[in-house]
Image 1 (tube, helix red, strand yellow):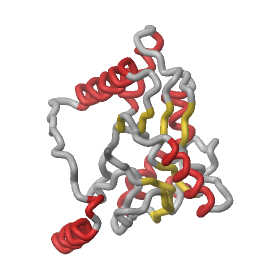
Image 2: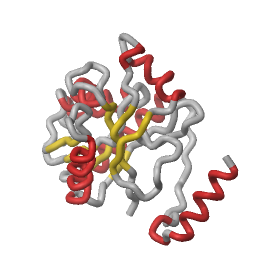
Image 3: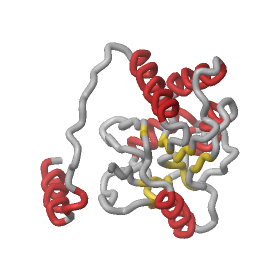
Length: 210
């Protein structure tokens, strides 16, 4: 790990644009429920302030309650997402978009089927050409920068990845195919009815901070 950190620091010094430009504020909450509520309110506040916001929203088990808060707020007429554009970080590959464990299906089930949005974009895990698909998604991202708000998870286990940026991912690549780390596959296989169905890889993107 120390060697990896040194390599990252040395690489960053060579690439001035990759040097940290923000000192993050760290908030610690007592319960997962408090985290869910805080994250949902942050999204709602963003959309109320800027109705045509461009968001990056997460998938997986952790943010389910956050999405439920957003859906309930929409039903109560407290927030309007009709001008919002959503970009997801990643998608399994290969996987059919209709597969119940795909992130495409997750977003429909947890949010999109309940909260109308202007547009939502997610990598296509069943695209016939990976290079063409990564280029398509990269172009879409470039046309919609900057992202106004991103809600992200970290993990699982010791991988500590953001999106599916597993160990060894190039710092300056934008959209790419990655092979899933064994720890990631072991943890995420729980979301599949048949754990053997979990794909070996994923399409993922970097998170650009402005």
